[in-house]
Image 1 (spheres, one colour):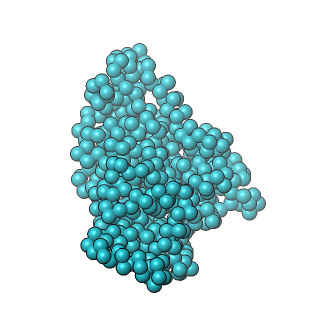
Image 2: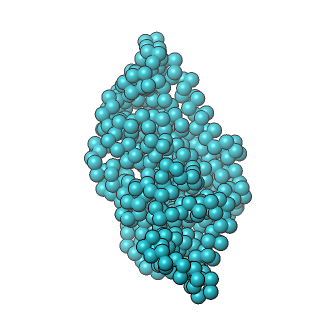
Image 3: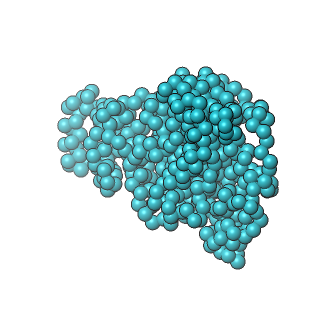
Length: 506
């Protein structure tokens, strides 16, 4: 099919993914808005299979593409999937939202038309209205859908109404799916939902947001629960912990390579650069929005040599300094699957406590008004709650906080994905001596931001949909009911005052 042919012409897997998410999966949506297509579900499923095959091509070199991975392809990124829309799943939502919008507008123009329509429909002679009723009946099998459909009015633009309907439908399906999955897959789902930023990167010219092919393949395999290596035929199961660890060389990990990032004997050869680059992104963005920032500042406690990674001057709630210290951790460890699945965010909280206990006394030694913000980052790109508070502090100084937050989270996602790939598939092992703070801080950082680097990351390939989403009318108004896509944005840690486009619209 043309999908495979056109995507094959792209050398960059990141560009292929952008085309799949922004263009190919929406090709038949205009037809679905014009005529009822649910009667042709077999054709739509064939089209969806082509989309899945194109995604599967992005993971060449990894393990088997499972049925769970195929489901995740069509789940929105903010719910833990990849965000390649399913034509079959959205058929009823497309037609219902389009017909309803046209109905309300025509009724306002010609009230007499409404009476004639209902008379024709009652006689069973109006096929489009019959298709609308059938679509509504199928949609209302989802809990809460009846209440949502009653809120639709002339103020709800068709695509926005369609998005609300699909978000509620898919959120219910994901909730049912999570009840059937093992603890590891629940943990991966939750982490992916909190960090949709890498897969939602838009096309642009910023080199800091370019993802190499092998890095993207590794990240997609993690996100879609595809094994990083092909399991040994002697072990079989992907969860059997008898594969060779890339960090220490011993056979103690599974085919997902869970546990290799936190492998003690593997050393810090690749963990330390990940930590340093995360701190560098925070420092760089803070400087770009006008915050006086220092990388690797000297200890504020004269009797201690304990230092943090970053100091932001004069931005605390009491007009003192905010100190930040980065800690990276592995979320998917075999001995923590069950706890993390039952209590999402548990690992991030524990990592923050470690850093807080280590640095708080030295931070407040010179000034009790100083604040400490531990920044806990997992291999999936999730950032702990206190780290997200620091992000909000930084982006609040920007001219457009939402755009800056989107850009910053995507920068952090690229850094994390790059270093995670190097740790899982690299060849560097062992411990490296920690260079002096002054030397680490003197490393040249990325080039300064320009306006286009930030704004282009909030622009969708579909300009009309982007404009509708930003107008905030109808169901998106202040009196709207909370629906799952909003809930997913909050689970991603994005505050209402600066929710990033990655969580809110992915």
